[in-house]
Length: 121
Figure 1 (spheres, rainbow, N blue to C red):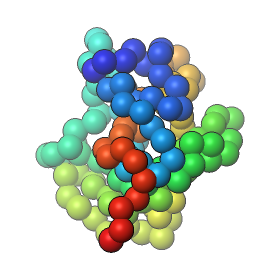
Figure 2 (figure 1 turned 90 degrees about the vertical axis):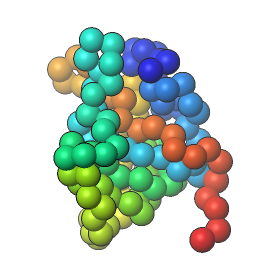
Figure 3 (figure 1 turned 60 degrees about the vertical axis):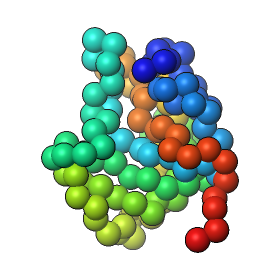
Figure 4 (figure 1 turned 60 degrees about the horizontal axis):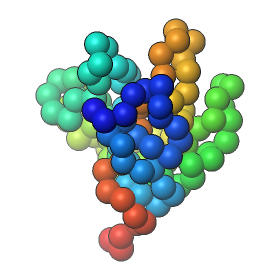
């Protein structure tokens, strides 16, 4: 981990990588930092739960009182298993990194996987 959750903003992930519209990202639902280490960001095994896709918009609107990203999802992993993308999962709106939660922590769940724009498929 290179960045403190308190230093994060909508344009930076926990590892100091830039987030820009068009880059490929991974979004974790239940990630947090405990004793200086990120948890809830497993990529393999029973605890691996995340989605991947393209960051369509940094400013995806305000939902439930906080600013959100807009991500078009093409990959879903639940319990370490690849799952089909359901209709309600095709577009998600996770909170911006660095957003204060109701329990006082900061959100850290969106990380860059691949910089730049979409590649042709």
